[in-house]
Length: 439
Image (cartoon, rainbow, N blue to C red):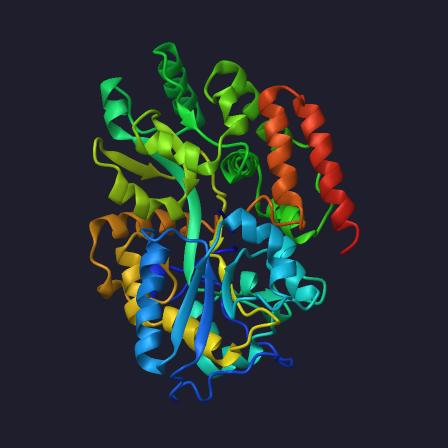
């Protein structure tokens, strides 16, 4: 997936996602990099992540591995997995003899927060102090890196290190828009009119997946389009009870149902994966795909038969997004000192610039090091969201099971198992049964 934050800083690549960094006190379970300049020849660091080899993160982290091996003499045992697989198995894997030494993991209350609360990932306060990561992150990314004793983000100790940003926006097929005489939509009315024109011409306009994250993020974006920052704080940080029949959630749920009935979204989305939906767009079969910046590098490399563009969701201030998924050190890591050294290399100027040039959103790069027009287009779009304090985390963050719960309900909404009212009631039950235990 993927994926979530609060407000990022002025320019992603200027070296900070903006929410000022906090230092935190407390003991650390992880050995820091005090001896990281030594010779670690013969030692092995087990690294796990779920990024594609050709993605911006995959490209940058492969370079980080090369640098790490050159500098330390150690060898990296790279293990790749699927986001959904790690999401469901991490609590067992990280507490076992098979645990990686350092792993990418999903941030948020229900994922990294839960593992921090039960002691499955290590406290990184000492490593933060040793390497100065908080200063590199700037203000706000610490929201998803820090968790309190209940696993609620934004305060407490550091348990992860995000080294890239991410957000969700609309990919569009410029050739298809041109063919039907359309402009890039700047309002919901424009978007719905465009989608109706495509339906009238036998084209399903919006690729999405209800089996995995895209439709849940679309549902959340629709709710955000009717909400404000307090709605986000209530939903994500439990400041006040969420009104599951209120104007934000009702609009989102009813709009999804309406778009399925009108053919804007195919009923096949119920059984489609995120990969299926992305390929529909990459293959030129649909004009619109609402998903995240983690697809951008792949779009640049894989789309060769048409021109595509990116734009923020029309008519909204708030947008799903955050600091990227985080590096964590499992409690059973056999090489926590080397793990911290590897994480620090992913924050280095060279790796951060490569991440940006490859289509990612670096958190600690210098803009002078990023010259690609495609990279600058993505950073510019991200800055639009950042400038209006629009980053609003992700819909599945509030509970440990909400990713699967939300996908299941979205599938039921698409295939007719649930009415919008039924869907809201199901989601409310899932949400409140967990939130009541941490308030």
